[in-house]
Length: 249
Image (cartoon, rainbow, N blue to C red; front, side, top):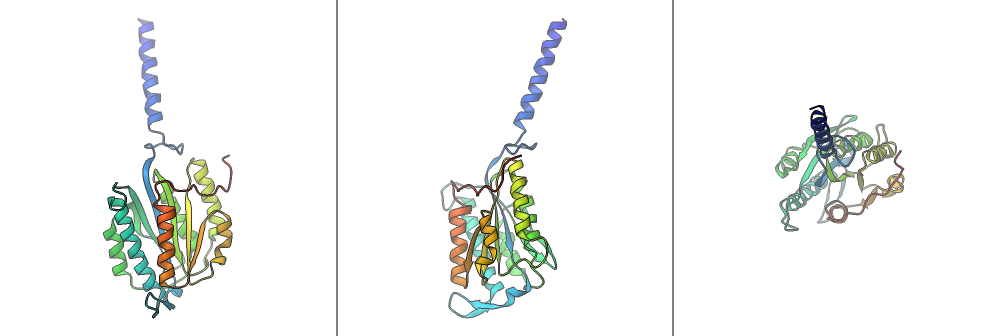
């Protein structure tokens, strides 16, 4: 009888262990197994300098925030087509957020969750204009917190900004810590910066850390650069892994 009881107990313990393994993600944290899909946080610069004008698609001087808003609408259409399968023939899972600036802080204007195109269109429609500082580091950190915890296989931060960080922390101090956190979770996160009407060399330290850094002087260049990042970096079926900047402990 004791032998039978011990056998039943052993089977029960084995079942619990198997269940625990099944509920452990590839990043080593409790939860569901990784799901194929894209986790994307878009950092959209709403600082006061975005009121300054640059040439639009027709060469007319137009406030940068209006041009960037149109670019965000284009991003929304591209994500919508990708999620529906209109471009590849196979629907894909996308979770996304929109990070903006509020005073000296970063703010989730659209909370991270299942991508809903209408939420982004509504935000653009209701956006009243830029003001305040440029807390890029805080915005990147806020976006990364969501994508790193998403459980999706592909994790990206896309930043559209017209200036350097003006409120601590700086992205150059934030990104290494985020990469280390990703390594500890056995995953990776990619960073993409579009320098709009600002010399891309400002972000050279981030490029050396493996971030994508491109420049855009007007509306045509902005749309081209964002389109290339979406097509070649974020929405690829077989994307290149982000550059490694550290070793797992």
